[in-house]
Length: 185
Image 1 (cartoon, rainbow, N blue to C red):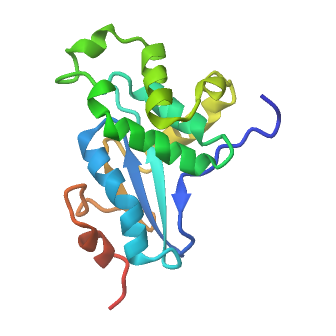
Image 2: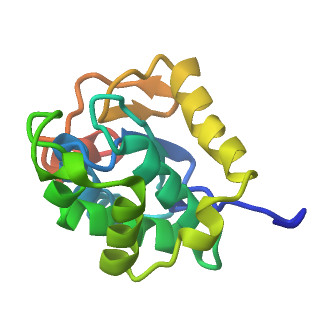
């Protein structure tokens, strides 16, 4: 890779307030949250808020590091933010093909990381394979991990509002509940 290696931040909107979601792509609760982020942004308004996604790889989701790396590989391409979102949505749409039953059993025990990557390419239409191997990608992965650790994030999904963890918000909340934190009456 060249010296112009760049991963587009997974951020939408340009408001002063910030809603950060720490997600693991195969976590069912993270999937629920992921599906609400763009509609939430539309509800609150791009001029009001910035929505950021940070990837929170978790060891009990066995292919988590491979999938997170693939998402971040997509973020380095042209229109990277949108391509990364397509990869996240593709994994969410086919979650059972990327996860183990009860985190340890099932047909995915026979899958290799290359099988998982092939599924990502097939379902998303994004060829992450060329970037997946890039040594520079490690710094992007470490940035996500470091930011999570620095903020005391250990599980997904976790939400931060304007730099502070907000344990009152959850993936089961409706968009209006999230919006109440940002819209001034």
